[in-house]
Length: 206
Image 1 (cartoon, helix red, strand yellow):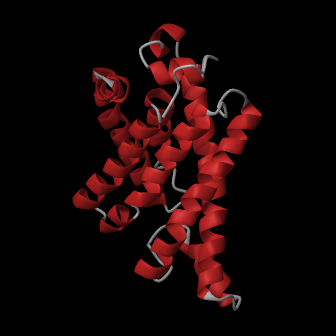
Image 2 (tube, rainbow, N blue to C red; image 1 turned 90 degrees about the horizontal axis):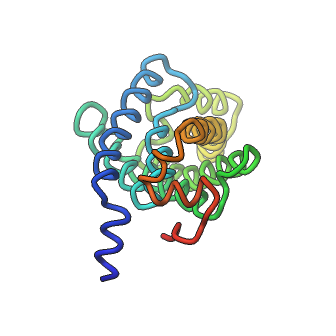
Image 3 (cartoon, rainbow, N blue to C red; image 1 turned 90 degrees about the vertical axis):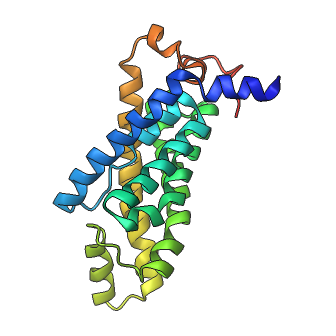
């Protein structure tokens, strides 16, 4: 019975449709940002939205699949960062579960928490798999810090944190604004969102 409840809660037909839509949002916006070499990523907007609507498991699944699919289609580097994308979805869902998407200042805190979780996961991948250089716009900061005489590890850590903090804060707010604009009737179709964002917490459990 418990397994059936979990399947109904996290793998409902709505959530199954939500995941590919969120993946498409991630990849389209992320590809655009990559082309113009912005110092932030904005490739997790779909993941954050999926986590807010469907919960941490759906958020984590969306992030993981986004990067794996992206890696198969066009960017092997993206596949290497699949664990980071998974952590972003999981952290977003957990922040929502504990009420950190109910006001703007709590969303700001959520963005910082998500950025910290993503940074902790990304630093060793960026450092040990790619030598600190991945081809993103953030590489300019790494190169600049190295030119100033900073060591590679310190440069990568500072680059990852500096790029993740504004990126995840902006992403968290974009996801929050999106859900704030949706009707309660629509949100009622997503039990996690309706309990966490509308103000009831009884059934918003991992």
